[in-house]
Each structure stands twice: as C-alpha cells, then as structure tokens.
Length: 266
Length: 302
Ligand SMILES: Nc1ncnc2c1ncn2[C@@H]1O[C@H](COP(=O)(O)OP(=O)(O)OP(=O)(O)O)[C@@H](O)[C@H]1O
Ligand SMILES: [Mg+2]
Image 1 (tube, rainbow over the protein chains, first blue to last red):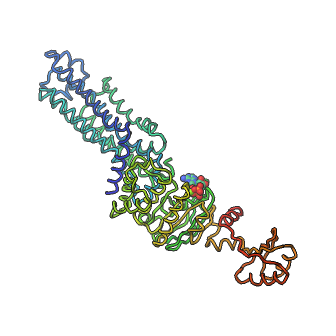
Image 2: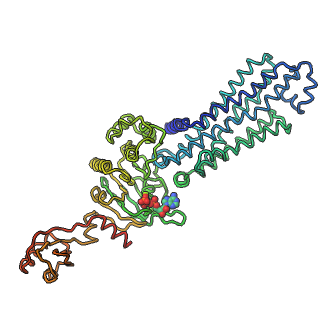
C-alpha cells in the first residue's frame, strides 16, 4: 500500500511538470463545462408558449425520456441540447488518463529508470496499480470538479426547479459517477499498452486517443438523431464498460510481467 | 552468499549466458570480467531477480531465485549499468522514492548519510538531470546502498568517471568490503579488478576461468624472473636452461628472462650458476604481467 502511494506521488511530481499534461487536466474540463453552461445561458427562457412547435422538431423519444410533464417546450429543448453534450463531457475521463499515462511510461523509458525501480522489492502489481491510479485519480477528480461547476452554474442560471432536476437527472449521475471512472480505467490500461510500445509521448498519446473515437461517434450519432441518450442506454453502456475493464485489466496482467517491462519497454 | 548452478539465458536466437556455475563467498569482492556483449549485465539481472533464467538455479543470500524474488530484492543492492535517475526530480527526492520502495526505516537519515558520504549533500535539492555523469553515478551508488544491502551488484561503477571520482568510488568499494558486504563487480577496468577483487572470473557467454588475480597470472603465463647482466648471450642462457626447474629462457638485450614456477626457491640456484659461469649480475627482478595481459590472452583463446 505504501509503495503504491510512493509511486503515485512520484508520478505526479514528474508528470505535472509537463505543460501538455497540465493543459489537458485543467483546460479540457473547463471547456467541457463552459459549453453546456453557455447553451443553458443563451437559450434560457426564450420562446415560450410555442411548446408544441418545438417539441415536434425534437427527435422522437426525447420528450418521454427526459422531459417531465410541466416543462415548457423551450425548457425541454434546453434539456435536450445539454444532454447532447453529455457525451463530449465524457472526453474528460478519457483524455486525462491517456495523457498522463503516455508521459509517465515514455518518461520512464527515456530516463531508463525502470530497471532500478524493478530492482526494488516492489511487486509488479503495485507498480502498475500505482501508475494506473496516478492517471485515473486526477481524471476522476477533474470530472467531478467539472460536473460540480456545471451543476452549480445551472443552479445559478436556471430558476425553474423542475427544469433543473431534468437537466441534472439520473442519466448525468450514472454517467459521471459510474461510466466516467470506468472509462478512465479503460483509457489508462489502453494507454499503458500503447505507451509501452512507442518512444515518443506525443505518438503514444495520439495513438491512445483512438479510444476517444467511440465517444465522439456516440456524440455525433446522438446529434444526428440516431438514438436518444436515455437511462437505459447509459446503463447498458456502463455494464459494457465494466466488462471491457475486466477484460483489459486481465490482459494487462498477462502482458505486463516484470521481465517484459524491463526488456520490451524500449 | 551467491550460488549459481547452470544458469543459462537465451534471448530468442542469442545465447547471452551459457551454463554459468559460480559461488561467491560472504564478504568477498568478486570481479566479473568480459568483453562487450559477454553477458555480464544479463548475469547481474538474473542474480538480482530482474529477469528469469532460461535454465538453471541460483540462491542469493540463501533465497531461492524464482521463488523468493522479493526477499532477494530486499537483500541486494543493484547499481545498474545506466544510472536511470528521474531527471526532473531533485537528488534528494530521487533517493526518497527508492528508500521508501526499499522499506528503509529512517529515510531522511539514510539519505543524509549517503549523500554526505559521496559528497552530494550540498547539491541535494538540484534536479538530478543537472548533474554531471559522475555525479549521477555517485547518486546511483547512494541509491543502491540506502537499504544497507548485504550483497551489492555493481555494473561498471567507474565507467565514464574522471580519475579522481573513479578513485573515490574504488576507495568506497574497499570501505564497503571492510563492512563485510559481498560485492559482485562487473568492470572493464582490469587494474581496478586487480586492485579490489579477491577473485575474478573471466566470462564470455561461458565462464572461462575463476581464480585470484595472482594465481591467474601464474597459471596463464607462469612466473618470470629477469636477470640483468652486463653482457647476456646465448651461452649464458644455455647454462641456465640446463637447470631442471627452468621452463624457458629468453635473451632480450642484456637480460635473461627466465620462466619458472617458484622464484623464491629457485633464484639462488640460478644466481649461483650464472656467477659460476662468469656473469656480472646487475640486478634481479620479477616480470609482472598485468591482469590485462592475462585477460587478453584468455579472451583471445576463448
Ligand atoms: N533484452 C534483450 N533482448 C535481446 N538480447 C539481449 C537483451 N539483453 C541482452 N541481450 C544480448 O545478450 C548479450 C549479452 O548482453 P549483456 O548486456 O549482458 O552484455 P555485457 O557483458 O553486459 O556487455 P557490456 O560490457 O557491453 O555491458 C548481447 O549479445 C546482447 O545483445
Ligand atoms: Mg553490461
């Protein structure tokens, strides 16, 4: 346990010196918070009384799944617009661990510090857990912080309590507190695997960012009206993520053996 | 302290270490010599349980390789071939990480002790990346010692150091030996091996010989005595050659170079024979082969 803490502190001391990492950890969550807040702010209390006209333009299923009765058409439109961005919000727990892991592994390789590290009594599991946590913890914290700002901001902008609880409904909570961490774990293990095979942190980062594609795909699919992000879909995504995580962690324990780390991470 | 039996390591096609059997006693400084690519670093990595042997077994400090690896890592200190410091972190922080990972009790105390001992205390808050090669090497030596390991693997500790730093490191190794630690020293510096090691092994994928530096010299070259005469010629050499214990005689300018096994016992007899033959002996000395000559001879014939 103490060794894992040592590794995490060391990772942070090293990796947060890097501008790219600080940029990703600080700027991305802010951006992803600003966009939905901007939407809420700019569309607040506009068109009223034309509920039917607007509702007819929303994809079918939106009204039932996210708009409680009692919301006006324009309120419902706001809810819909904001939930479109939930997918983009999920970039935060994906991009942060990918960046941290890429810089941390490739950094170890360029300074050749893995060998002395592996010569200590630390177990391979402790080392990998430490590295994963060092990337996942900031990702989760940044996600929570960003969501906190978003929730606070909506509360200040939106007066209507019914609208507020529709904006920050169970879908968001599942996404932030369940899907987010699962995504972060998936991203870090994936990034570890990629980073162990390349020698440039930027290349590692770019390849690892492949994992963003499904998230972006989901976003555009939703914008194009292919599906409506309701509670059921998010719950299914959470279960699939969990299965993928278990699979990836299992694969990682097979791939990352002490000798492999020492002789193959070059 | 170190007991290896038939250790073999194969990387795909490359046979790096072949059938190495070796014993190193407690408190011994063992020199491991061999050309580039001989498999020295690979051997150290196996014995320090960093990589697994393809075949063979070993016991390090009584712990069985492959079964008690964490115990082995707790007991040994490894100076790796490249220092491998975290360049962005301070010297002190670098050591702190390793002290914690090695379960050191008094972390600040140990860090202070070794930084002072190696003359880096003043620079402890500087980033390791700003250190010169020699300073990094010393920092790496400090790192290998923080947990007071009983066995030390030093992979080329003086490579790339200036004469003064190299001297300091060698003095340090002697100090460590005095404290009773067992030291496994890989080096390309044969004078260093000669000076520091109780025994040396010459290695090139397989172990060619193991012995004390002195015995290696005499077994490879025999011992040679030089008689400086006012005039040396083949006639003089002929008188000496008749002696039963003399293995070989050569005339070089005004010197007779005589190979024999036991100069202490035989020199008086040689002297008597030469004086009787009318030679004017100016002085007598032993021709010392450097360990380098021995090494080159062994590696060439391997
Ligand atoms: N991870 C590896 N994968 C493949 N081959 C390797 C690996 N490590 C070492 N080798 C090979 O094993 C052989 C021995 O290498 P090693 O580094 O042990 O030599 P060395 O005696 O330490 O050499 P030097 O004096 O140059 O440090 C070399 O042929 C090397 O190419
Ligand atoms: Mg080597």
